[in-house]
Image (tube, rainbow, N blue to C red; front, side, top):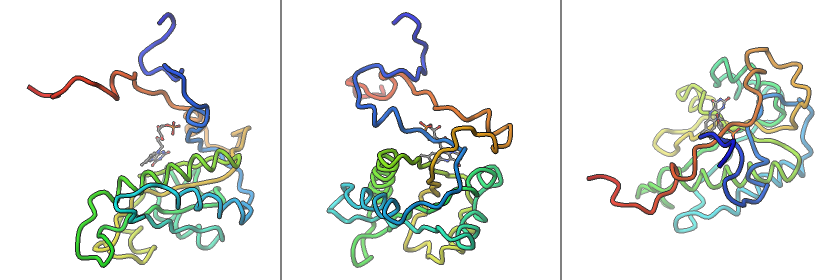
Length: 198
Ligand SMILES: Cc1cc2nc3c(=O)[nH]c(=O)nc-3n(C[C@H](O)[C@H](O)[C@H](O)COP(=O)(O)O)c2cc1C
């Protein structure tokens, strides 16, 4: 299509704007979020589908400054520089085993991904943004959260808040990254040609 480049951000087919309106900003306002909004985020996550309806996710969150600082201390410095401002920080955990804990649930990370994305879409409905982070010290996260490696995967840290439209307070190097990301072309993410190898 004329003017289109690979990795374009323009939708290639019709899609609901709820998908394209979501992105991962780093300029957040520090204003606290109303309790109702926080509940609404976790309510959206609660309705995600899961293998055997196990609902293996657990969101451990902090809104109070001292508790947020504890979560921020687990992040890599680059994430600390923007995420420390966010009024709501959390970790998405996935329980490693089914029910009574004797059988591995290999689908738990997949299901926890569905729950996080439900939360992220609900955030947009509320006028908020959610930004996931893999940049954290995993050992420190287990320690700060007080959880066992036998029981949980630590899937991601997540920062939520209202976007600071001016982005003035962001450090310059981070401000340079403050725009929605591009996407691969449709043919790179879905194919009806298989087997893929051989
Ligand atoms: C699991 C996961 C880990 C991520 N880790 C980080 C991170 O540590 N720091 C960061 O600034 N962004 C992080 N991101 C944000 C991604 O870079 C972003 O989602 C991706 O570039 C697509 O852009 P978009 O969300 O703006 O559409 C992460 C996203 C996910 C889903």
